[in-house]
Length: 360
Image 1: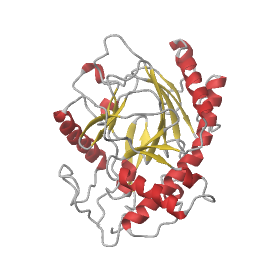
Image 2: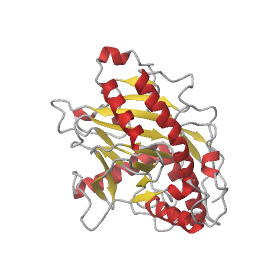
Image 3: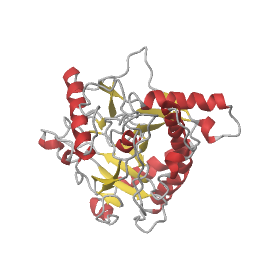
């Protein structure tokens, strides 16, 4: 088994002990290694993503909206945030919905998370105020570490792993400000007062959302694999790792209108919880590119590569990008669970049903 750690934008995979677990049936044809052990996931996932993206681009490189007779999955997780009120049936219904989406598109949106619209408004206002500052002012909040404080426009590169033939797409077309949980840890850079406070409060409120989400994923694994996992299993195995919140701005830049703002990729970690009510996120569902609708107050959850490995391929790492038609000066807030401050390198063997062979 392997656990991914992100260091300066790159994935480092730490070997973990492997116990026998089972080979899945019915995996997609493009997963060439489905019947064998995948010993080098740092090579496997870029190749897997390229194959899927090439197939989607062959249908059309442009994202479309969902057909009129389909709606994007939006799941109310409130039964898991108020455990004393709902029935077991309501909680089971949430688990079944998450299991369906995690094993197909690898993503869904959530409501009922308990975070007020007023906090989202403060967050967006403070971020826009920060990013409107001069570059010299913003660089005063840089730490030289991409995971703490400010990173200037076109200073990171998804293309270092997921290649692009366009010279305009060799660097990410965004600027960011990052803060790890807890907000007061020594590695963080304290931004302007209103921005720091809004980011800090949002991180604190995300803790209950992350806990509930990982309990739901744990229950989904238990159900799918036919095994009895402790209710907080997937949260407990990451007790020595915290989350990372990034405020990302995708400025509109003359000459780059035809460039993908952030190249197709899947996230390295466990799950990502994204806030953004502005257009631009696109993902592959059912083999082609679709625009992801994001309503105000909704959060978007996507499966990362670590959950794909820990579930032995059951959960699908979500492949997404920020497209060419992203809203002008789009702002988003991805929260990467387990990708912030770390005091040890946790890892688990793939979680498998009886007789299943490990794939990772």
